[in-house]
Image (cartoon, rainbow, N blue to C red; front, side, top):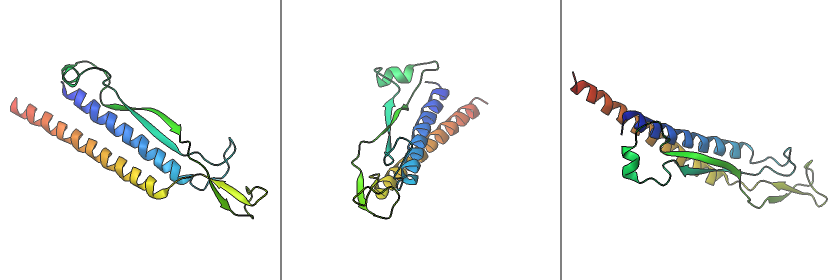
Length: 144
């Protein structure tokens, strides 16, 4: 396995975690959105992550050369089918005839846990990348 493959794996992991952070930020920003262009309250999003090594074994992946995709990738970002939260606010412009307003069912605490998890995973990928860079530099120093 060459160093560029190791760099690709870390870069793919950082890309996935960045997407997770972006989705959490979007969910938190829209946690009070009662009306979207599609109508109804905002639907929370979630990131689906897939492995990029497919059906190859771990050893085959390590021995693979070339520019194949390694690590993981975002396979899709989809809306979550959470039930909506109905709140009694008769003066709200989006209230129905009974004074109920439909809000997205977004739990800020759960979103913050997802944010923390994605941040820590991103940091782990950065540390792995830095360790790989240090290893490559040390290898070059041996050759002097």
